[in-house]
Image (cartoon, rainbow, N blue to C red):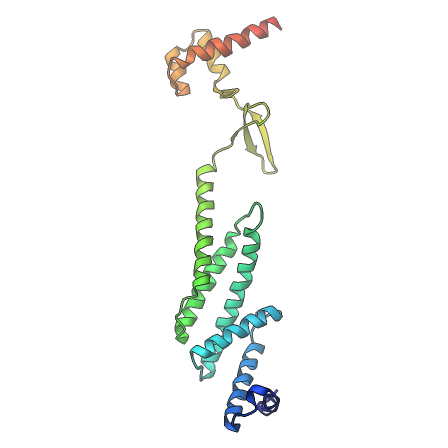
Length: 240
Protein backbone atom coordinates (compact mmCIF):
# COMPACT_ATOMS: atom_id res chain seq x y z
CA UNK A 1 0.00 0.00 0.00
CA UNK A 2 1.45 3.41 -1.02
CA UNK A 3 1.35 6.63 0.98
CA UNK A 4 -1.62 8.13 -0.93
CA UNK A 5 -3.80 5.12 -0.20
CA UNK A 6 -2.83 5.28 3.47
CA UNK A 7 -3.73 9.01 3.51
CA UNK A 8 -7.18 8.26 2.10
CA UNK A 9 -7.77 5.66 4.80
CA UNK A 10 -6.59 8.02 7.55
CA UNK A 11 -8.91 10.78 6.37
CA UNK A 12 -11.89 8.64 7.30
CA UNK A 13 -10.71 8.18 10.89
CA UNK A 14 -12.22 10.61 13.46
CA UNK A 15 -8.87 11.47 15.08
CA UNK A 16 -7.46 12.74 11.76
CA UNK A 17 -10.54 14.56 10.50
CA UNK A 18 -9.41 18.10 11.32
CA UNK A 19 -5.64 17.92 10.76
CA UNK A 20 -3.86 19.69 7.90
CA UNK A 21 -2.86 18.04 4.63
CA UNK A 22 0.77 18.36 5.56
CA UNK A 23 0.25 16.68 8.92
CA UNK A 24 -1.84 13.95 7.30
CA UNK A 25 0.93 13.27 4.80
CA UNK A 26 3.41 13.00 7.67
CA UNK A 27 1.18 10.52 9.53
CA UNK A 28 0.69 8.46 6.38
CA UNK A 29 4.43 8.37 5.75
CA UNK A 30 5.09 7.24 9.33
CA UNK A 31 2.53 4.43 9.02
CA UNK A 32 3.93 3.38 5.65
CA UNK A 33 7.47 3.16 7.06
CA UNK A 34 6.27 1.29 10.14
CA UNK A 35 4.27 -1.26 8.11
CA UNK A 36 7.17 -1.67 5.70
CA UNK A 37 9.57 -2.34 8.57
CA UNK A 38 7.22 -4.85 10.24
CA UNK A 39 6.70 -6.71 6.94
CA UNK A 40 10.46 -7.19 6.56
CA UNK A 41 11.04 -8.75 10.01
CA UNK A 42 12.62 -12.20 9.74
CA UNK A 43 11.37 -13.93 12.91
CA UNK A 44 7.83 -12.56 13.31
CA UNK A 45 5.70 -15.70 12.92
CA UNK A 46 2.19 -14.91 14.23
CA UNK A 47 -0.19 -12.11 15.25
CA UNK A 48 1.00 -12.13 18.86
CA UNK A 49 4.64 -11.61 17.87
CA UNK A 50 3.61 -9.02 15.28
CA UNK A 51 1.74 -7.12 18.01
CA UNK A 52 4.81 -7.34 20.27
CA UNK A 53 7.04 -6.13 17.43
CA UNK A 54 4.64 -3.26 16.64
CA UNK A 55 4.66 -2.12 20.28
CA UNK A 56 8.47 -2.21 20.34
CA UNK A 57 8.71 -0.29 17.09
CA UNK A 58 6.35 2.44 18.31
CA UNK A 59 8.34 2.71 21.53
CA UNK A 60 11.67 3.04 19.71
CA UNK A 61 10.27 5.48 17.13
CA UNK A 62 8.99 7.57 20.03
CA UNK A 63 12.49 7.73 21.51
CA UNK A 64 14.54 8.37 18.38
CA UNK A 65 14.19 9.17 14.72
CA UNK A 66 15.88 6.78 12.30
CA UNK A 67 16.60 8.80 9.21
CA UNK A 68 18.74 6.56 6.99
CA UNK A 69 18.25 3.02 5.72
CA UNK A 70 21.24 1.68 7.70
CA UNK A 71 19.65 2.76 10.99
CA UNK A 72 16.28 1.27 9.99
CA UNK A 73 17.97 -2.02 9.06
CA UNK A 74 19.69 -2.06 12.45
CA UNK A 75 16.36 -1.35 14.16
CA UNK A 76 14.75 -4.26 12.32
CA UNK A 77 17.60 -6.51 13.44
CA UNK A 78 17.11 -5.32 17.03
CA UNK A 79 13.37 -6.10 16.99
CA UNK A 80 14.02 -9.50 15.40
CA UNK A 81 16.40 -10.39 18.22
CA UNK A 82 13.91 -9.21 20.84
CA UNK A 83 11.25 -11.46 19.30
CA UNK A 84 13.63 -14.42 19.64
CA UNK A 85 14.33 -13.48 23.27
CA UNK A 86 10.60 -13.43 24.08
CA UNK A 87 10.15 -16.79 22.37
CA UNK A 88 12.96 -18.40 24.39
CA UNK A 89 11.72 -16.80 27.62
CA UNK A 90 8.28 -18.27 26.99
CA UNK A 91 9.76 -21.77 26.63
CA UNK A 92 11.90 -21.35 29.76
CA UNK A 93 8.96 -20.09 31.81
CA UNK A 94 6.92 -23.10 30.75
CA UNK A 95 9.79 -25.39 31.78
CA UNK A 96 10.25 -23.60 35.10
CA UNK A 97 6.52 -23.94 35.96
CA UNK A 98 6.69 -27.75 35.77
CA UNK A 99 6.60 -29.82 38.97
CA UNK A 100 10.17 -31.03 38.39
CA UNK A 101 11.74 -28.30 36.24
CA UNK A 102 14.89 -29.01 34.29
CA UNK A 103 17.22 -26.26 33.19
CA UNK A 104 17.91 -26.24 29.44
CA UNK A 105 21.36 -24.70 29.73
CA UNK A 106 21.77 -24.31 25.96
CA UNK A 107 18.68 -22.07 25.84
CA UNK A 108 19.95 -20.02 28.78
CA UNK A 109 23.25 -19.50 26.97
CA UNK A 110 21.41 -18.49 23.79
CA UNK A 111 19.33 -16.04 25.81
CA UNK A 112 22.44 -14.53 27.35
CA UNK A 113 24.10 -14.17 23.93
CA UNK A 114 21.00 -12.61 22.37
CA UNK A 115 20.66 -10.07 25.16
CA UNK A 116 24.31 -9.15 24.68
CA UNK A 117 23.68 -8.51 20.98
CA UNK A 118 20.55 -6.51 21.82
CA UNK A 119 22.46 -4.23 24.17
CA UNK A 120 25.12 -3.66 21.50
CA UNK A 121 22.48 -2.72 18.90
CA UNK A 122 20.71 -0.41 21.36
CA UNK A 123 23.98 1.39 22.05
CA UNK A 124 24.61 1.65 18.31
CA UNK A 125 21.20 3.25 17.80
CA UNK A 126 21.40 5.44 20.89
CA UNK A 127 18.87 3.29 22.75
CA UNK A 128 21.05 2.40 25.70
CA UNK A 129 18.17 2.11 28.19
CA UNK A 130 18.46 -1.30 29.87
CA UNK A 131 15.43 -3.57 29.69
CA UNK A 132 15.00 -4.34 33.38
CA UNK A 133 12.68 -7.29 32.80
CA UNK A 134 15.21 -9.04 30.56
CA UNK A 135 18.04 -8.37 32.98
CA UNK A 136 16.05 -9.71 35.94
CA UNK A 137 15.08 -12.80 33.97
CA UNK A 138 18.69 -13.51 32.99
CA UNK A 139 19.78 -13.08 36.61
CA UNK A 140 17.14 -15.60 37.70
CA UNK A 141 18.22 -18.24 35.19
CA UNK A 142 21.91 -17.62 35.81
CA UNK A 143 21.20 -18.23 39.49
CA UNK A 144 19.36 -21.48 38.71
CA UNK A 145 22.17 -22.56 36.39
CA UNK A 146 24.78 -21.98 39.12
CA UNK A 147 22.68 -23.93 41.64
CA UNK A 148 22.31 -26.84 39.21
CA UNK A 149 26.04 -26.96 38.44
CA UNK A 150 26.89 -26.69 42.14
CA UNK A 151 24.54 -29.57 42.96
CA UNK A 152 26.13 -31.66 40.20
CA UNK A 153 29.67 -30.95 41.40
CA UNK A 154 28.79 -31.78 45.00
CA UNK A 155 26.80 -34.93 44.25
CA UNK A 156 28.24 -36.40 41.04
CA UNK A 157 30.20 -39.05 42.99
CA UNK A 158 27.37 -39.87 45.37
CA UNK A 159 25.89 -43.24 44.39
CA UNK A 160 25.21 -44.88 47.75
CA UNK A 161 21.55 -44.96 48.77
CA UNK A 162 19.40 -46.24 51.60
CA UNK A 163 16.46 -48.49 50.72
CA UNK A 164 13.23 -46.83 51.93
CA UNK A 165 11.78 -50.26 52.82
CA UNK A 166 14.54 -52.30 54.49
CA UNK A 167 16.79 -49.32 55.36
CA UNK A 168 19.86 -51.15 54.02
CA UNK A 169 22.40 -49.22 51.94
CA UNK A 170 23.20 -50.16 48.35
CA UNK A 171 25.21 -48.77 45.41
CA UNK A 172 24.05 -47.70 41.96
CA UNK A 173 26.32 -48.42 39.00
CA UNK A 174 25.87 -46.96 35.52
CA UNK A 175 26.25 -49.59 32.78
CA UNK A 176 25.60 -47.29 29.74
CA UNK A 177 22.00 -48.49 29.55
CA UNK A 178 20.62 -47.98 33.02
CA UNK A 179 21.52 -48.13 36.68
CA UNK A 180 21.62 -51.45 38.53
CA UNK A 181 21.98 -52.10 42.21
CA UNK A 182 24.76 -54.13 43.87
CA UNK A 183 25.34 -55.05 47.47
CA UNK A 184 27.12 -52.39 49.54
CA UNK A 185 30.11 -54.33 50.91
CA UNK A 186 31.09 -51.62 53.37
CA UNK A 187 27.81 -51.56 55.26
CA UNK A 188 25.68 -53.94 57.26
CA UNK A 189 22.29 -52.32 57.63
CA UNK A 190 23.26 -48.75 58.39
CA UNK A 191 26.49 -49.68 60.19
CA UNK A 192 29.90 -49.14 58.61
CA UNK A 193 31.11 -52.73 58.20
CA UNK A 194 33.12 -55.10 56.01
CA UNK A 195 32.75 -58.85 56.35
CA UNK A 196 36.16 -59.75 54.88
CA UNK A 197 37.86 -57.29 57.23
CA UNK A 198 36.10 -58.77 60.28
CA UNK A 199 37.00 -62.30 59.18
CA UNK A 200 40.70 -61.36 59.09
CA UNK A 201 40.31 -59.85 62.56
CA UNK A 202 38.53 -62.99 63.77
CA UNK A 203 41.38 -65.30 62.72
CA UNK A 204 43.99 -62.93 64.18
CA UNK A 205 45.58 -61.74 60.91
CA UNK A 206 44.96 -58.06 61.68
CA UNK A 207 44.62 -56.15 64.93
CA UNK A 208 41.80 -54.13 66.38
CA UNK A 209 43.75 -50.94 65.66
CA UNK A 210 44.22 -51.95 62.01
CA UNK A 211 40.49 -52.61 61.59
CA UNK A 212 39.72 -49.20 63.09
CA UNK A 213 42.27 -47.55 60.79
CA UNK A 214 40.83 -49.14 57.65
CA UNK A 215 37.26 -48.21 58.61
CA UNK A 216 38.29 -44.77 59.78
CA UNK A 217 36.66 -45.19 63.18
CA UNK A 218 37.62 -45.40 66.85
CA UNK A 219 39.00 -48.78 67.98
CA UNK A 220 36.14 -48.93 70.51
CA UNK A 221 33.79 -49.31 67.57
CA UNK A 222 35.46 -52.55 66.41
CA UNK A 223 34.35 -54.85 69.31
CA UNK A 224 30.77 -53.67 68.81
CA UNK A 225 30.88 -54.70 65.14
CA UNK A 226 32.62 -57.93 65.96
CA UNK A 227 30.30 -59.04 68.77
CA UNK A 228 26.98 -57.68 67.60
CA UNK A 229 27.29 -58.43 63.88
CA UNK A 230 30.11 -60.77 62.92
CA UNK A 231 29.81 -63.32 65.77
CA UNK A 232 26.03 -63.21 65.62
CA UNK A 233 26.01 -63.93 61.87
CA UNK A 234 28.70 -66.58 62.30
CA UNK A 235 26.59 -68.32 64.94
CA UNK A 236 23.46 -68.16 62.83
CA UNK A 237 25.28 -69.55 59.79
CA UNK A 238 26.52 -72.56 61.81
CA UNK A 239 23.06 -73.23 63.16
CA UNK A 240 21.68 -73.21 59.64
